[in-house]
Image (tube, rainbow, N blue to C red):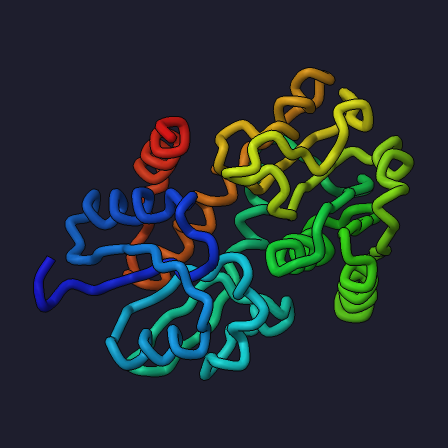
Length: 281
């Protein structure tokens, strides 16, 4: 690290659980780049963005709870991020802060690469926050699902997101009450947990009771720490196919790497380091 080192950071609250520093720093080292990635717990978002601009920080990953609230403080939004209404990546282009979203595409690829066929299938998504916005928007546009059902602990939030998706994409999307989750899952083929339930340190929490799951489901949990969440454990025990959160984590990190460095990300290295870092905690 020296005066020419380019700094990339993670901003969110909490960030102690994150393995993004290990993943990104391993990628920088693999390509011999003079970059460093650090995580910062951020509550005062406006001041943090001023710091990124003032200090010449190259870029930032954005996590809970700032993916939507960060937008007013940015100078420009990529077209996809603008449509989605959520940002998980910031690029500092000579003082101009540009917001991107790599979550949705990485979630879509995580499903496809693991054998999930979305076309004509019912998809249930838990959560209606920033990550859910990205994922549901991408699935509505690219996945051609028969129907997307969104459930959130805050009913008004899932209703608003479903309505917006219908208006923007024309896809068949609706919100549903959490108490109807069991009924909704009976005919579903894909379940995506886009909520933080089950994330470290609350390892004994699951967004879905075990008895609601069935072997006809593909269960994708975007929570990556722990490596196997309680939801994924329940799903395996019921005979369902599972997709771990590291899939989306590494794929979206790879796209961030590409934006910040203009180089192809070493995904194999990033997967290896990410898996080792999560399992080692």
